[in-house]
Length: 172
Image 1 (cartoon, rainbow, N blue to C red):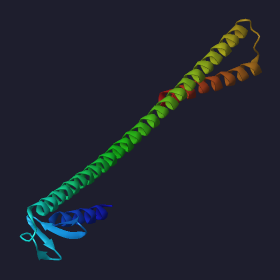
Image 2: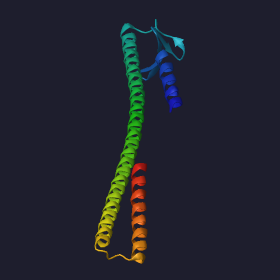
Image 3: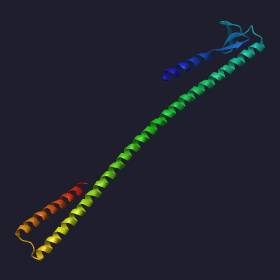
Image 4: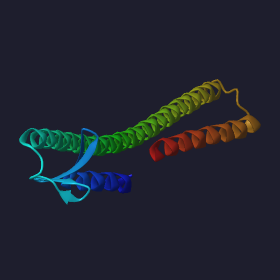
């Protein structure tokens, strides 16, 4: 794209050096204050009205070319600004994605922590309930030797379950 713009710009600059003006089906070339016809200087051969007409047309053409050049520069500037804005938008989107990912990760971690707390609460409740029942049965002397082993095994497993839940919670 830059190459195209450079070629167009060079074309305009070349034209600005000498404008071709058509008056009365004659193509004149104007360089500064000199009027050429087929490469020959005819400035002195033309009358004042013709010179003024040719010069005013050349001036008009120069101004038109300057305006086109300004428009081209502005278009280039606008394209550059649009590209910069697009880049900034892309950067913002990337940052937003990163923020969203971090938020999602935090939410996931929070959910895991809440689940671990709930598991610890349930395990502790289950252990307390089992201890209460064991102590109640023991007080009433309703536990024999076989039951005592079963209860000890059950209580150990529940204590392990509570310890495991505590470790999991601390890990988070």
